[in-house]
Amino acid sequence: METRKLGQSDLEISVMTLGGWMFGIDSWSNVNDDDSIRTIHAAIDEGITMVDTALGYGGGYSENIIGKALKMKPGRLLISSKCSADPKQIPQQADAALLRLQVDCIDVYHVHYPSPRIPIAETIGAMSKLVDAGKIRYIGVSNFSVEQMEEGLKIARIECCQPPLNLFWREAEEAILPFCHRHQIGVICYSSLAQGLLTGRFRGREDIPDDIRSRNKLFKEGTFERCLEVLDFMQTIAQKHGKSLIQVALNWVVQQPQITSAIVGAQNPGELKHDVKSFDWKLSPEELKTLGERGLQISRTMDFDTNMWGYKPS
Image (cartoon, rainbow, N blue to C red):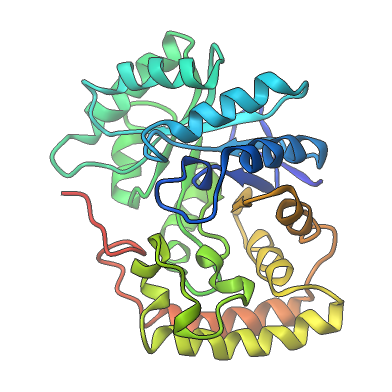
């Protein structure tokens, strides 16, 4: 699988990062530990170089599953995880993550969400101390604005930014991606398949699972139906290439400027092996442009004041 350098670091990241949110179970349906472990092992076999997780994924349950899986199978996966913005809690959260993951150092440790009640300098200062202590290699941020990243860079080097990005949710394109380009910050985007919407599995409102996706703005009445119209157009491109909607959607994401890698979740090895085939071919420039324009029409109707699930740190 193609790899790309993460920012100014010495890390080479595969264009697909295995997403570990599902391994935390609590926000998802039809997930079990055995499948999660087998999926992690399959990722190693398929040449994926990084797995992404967080304290917030099942209160550390996802980290625990990843640690268990990596102890069971020879091979190396770079680990990306996330903590809170509270400088008083960050040291303890990092220590607990190291224990769950069964490693001595986390490759990239992100602040999951900034807190409007805590100065960015204090948050990044606490992260910098983890680097000095050898507990993490690089600092990352997730869901940060340009202004918040600017404040953070005054304190320490930020090597990675994790924004949401998919064909229908394009907020990052306006300011975040250009900022990361100027400062040579790697970008590992999440929600690359819009939580399954871009898979084509959900063709009616009755198909939407009663889990975290039921709160996703892209699944709301009106927006969901407009997305389905774009999926119908995508299907013609997919058929032309002999690919699935998933493979078209992921190919589009990793061809966007400044994207280092796309986080993709998988419930089982079969799903993962299918997703991996998204990256050994390329959409044409015209197809990228046309798809991008159609998806942008939907993105422009979104309210970005809160995140994809209507959440805003307070």
